[in-house]
Amino acid sequence: MNVLPLILGALLVMAIAYRYYSAFLAAKVVALDDKRITPSHQLADGHNYQPTNKWVVFGHHFAAIAGSGPLIGPVLAAQFGYLPGFLWLLIGVCLAGAVQDFMILVASIRRKGRSLAEIARNEISPLAGAVGSVAIFLIVIIALAGLGLAVVNALKDSPWGVFSIGMTIPIALLVGFWMNRLRPGKIVEASVIGVILVLAAVIFGADIPGSSLAPYFTFSKNGVLVALALYAFFAAVLPIWMLLAPRDYLSSYMKVGTIAALVLGIILVHPDLQAPAFSAYMNGGGPIIPGKWFPYVFITIACGAISGFHALVASGTTPKMLDKETDARVIGYGAMLMEGLVGVVALLASCSLFPADYFAINVPAEKFAALGLNPVHLQQLCQAVGENVAGRPGGAVSLAVGFAQIFSGIPGLQNLMGYFYHFMIMFEALFILTTIDAGTRVCRFLFQEFGGRYWKPLENPNWLPGTLLSTGIVVCLWAYFIWTGSVSTIWPMFGTANQLLASVALAVATSALINAGKARYAWVTLCPLLFVATTTLTAAALNILNNFLPLAAAHPEKAFQAYLNVALTVVIMASAVVILWEAFHRWYQILVEKKHPKALKKPVHPLPDIPDYGCC
Image 1: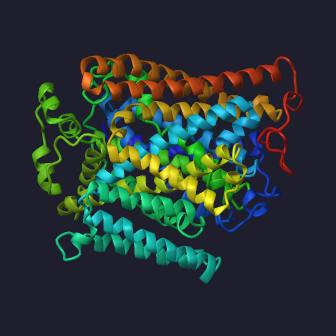
Image 2: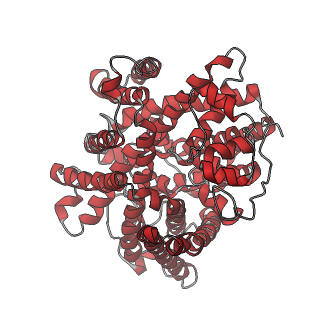
Image 3: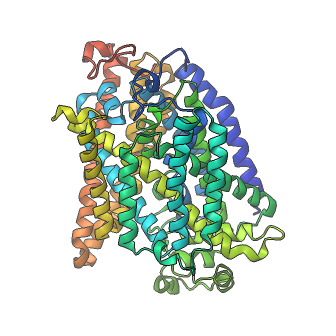
């Protein structure tokens, strides 16, 4: 089948969803009103709370949520064929992922930028808030470690990548000062300067390998990790306008520009899909994902359809920067549609490879030999990109090859496949890095909010010693996992944890609607909640029974790793079940027993000018 109908169909469906469904959510479900004062104005401190231009916030938010998930997940799920992943990406992002991001963002800006755990504490119960804090913190640490490991592996011994991405830091500092101190409000000026400098860094980065500067930008795995940890620490500590927001904003130009180029390239080249609609591994036995399409498609493709991590950004840095309420529609719903498009493009690009070539890249050599497949164009692909791409599992390499193959199919660009390949490798690393800086800051907020219950000064986000301490602890935790390499044993359950967090976020959003007296609209979050919770809890149980416990029995030397996976999965599952049970109990009290939320419990954090309960 040709790719053109699928990409055009996806664009059309997403455009209709944004035009009509997001308008319904904004006008009827939450009733956005610019007369309300947003946290960025009411609590403006020039550090964490800062009114910011809508498109700058969009760039920051999109850069923060768009990590490796929408790139890597669809590539791995291509094992099942192109149709299961395509349908989940398209339906999931319009009816679940974008709804979750938008609803949590609105709930947070109406609770003074409070985190997801604190919103759960108010909207569901104190127990849900306490359990949610622990579960969310654990999930974020695992996520940051997994994302950080991907960056480390992509940038180690890569002077071009290190130079290009490293240069975005001083460029971001310049743009931040330009927009906020030198020429306040001159967004266009700062954007033009920043984009030109970022493109220059990418172009000149190609000359770094083999030059006298190469040794200064060639780091080992641990060297990249140290640099990454230092960057994440300062990005989480410095005022948000100074480094994090402008860097993510500039990165979003590269991300959005590259995505637009990929969509245009697919339309121009319109390659045929070499992968079948449904592969022979639909019922299990696949060399990449051992389980059946249900439920594994729905946890393998996480961020492109729905992601719990997004709810942390939507209740972390973004609500503290929103200038007015109506900006939430394009930022919350629109940015997630953009990420869904990234997932669709990644899936189609990987499915344009011949299945034998796809598996040769994504499966270790010894396992691929057992499949009995003969590569079709693998040798030519290796020669075209300038390095051996066989036996490079993880999805990143096959995705870069697929993208490079599409770009090189444009007339006049046939001889640039090697450049496109390395550009895409760096592009993937940049995607992930912008999630790490925002994720570290969000995790710092979580740590301070939870720790502040036991040590009051820690709760103040502007208290410098507390900020330094909490950020240092967060960075050390995820960096330790990468340094020891143990995160590679935890990664298989990250998809499950991430989707369970999405279930929690949807439960919180549903509670906010019911508490606000808008139970008639609760279906917008309840329907995706029931689906995501069912598929993910099923996948978590199957991971324990079919993957982790057999690993411990078959390989005693890996028993600790396997049992650690089991323990973490059980903790996260139990936390999600407790929160869901508390939510169902609250809904029963309100809808059946007709008890108003105020009669149930006083608000945990009573704040002026906002409702005690509900996002409306």
